[in-house]
Image (tube, rainbow, N blue to C red; front, side):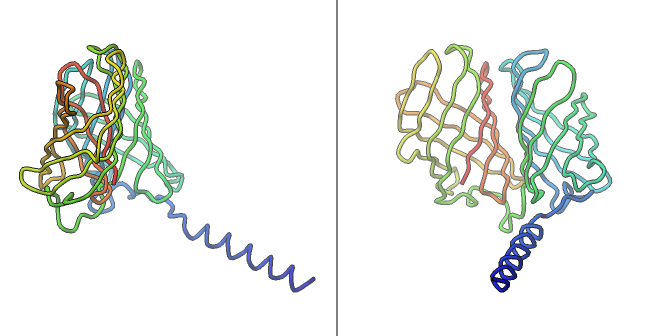
Length: 261
């Protein structure tokens, strides 16, 4: 009986130790760990209407960042350079912090990272804004970003947002295969499922195009067969090339989503 009890204790110590060892606590430089590039996506409301945001940001040790923001307010898209400050909370091991865009205007976000420091959630705290989203580290992409990064790879589609012209909320999912060519081609495997609010539900084949730039931003289109319209996006590559964050650029639409390998 003593031997059994000792064995159980040793097993518990081993399990607890392994769990503790697997937790990679955040530090004051977690966001700026090379290459320090992150994609950020959020969706919600602002004083100007529905508000979708996509960012590619480079965090620098010392508490500053620069980047590009794609913002659609009430269906009007703007793309502009941003800069600002960031800081981890004290202690940094809580994996929480604040990011403040100071130029060209002020946007204040609180974030909470996962225990690996490679992703997290983010919320805008400025008065009048109800905005929530997530952030993902770009990670290491040894071969660099190009269309070849996605050659013969299949991604699941997640889409959520609003198209006022069809009566409001819309969603979408499906499997998409990227061919890695120039220009890049996309094919649904074998279809996409779209809930377009008042316009109805559709299960359709789809094709598209994409371009991935050397700086890991890009563009793309998706055309569901027979729908009579296409969706155009701006995108940011994250997670070592295994995920694309994107925002729809069609006038009047407020839709965001991601492709996930």
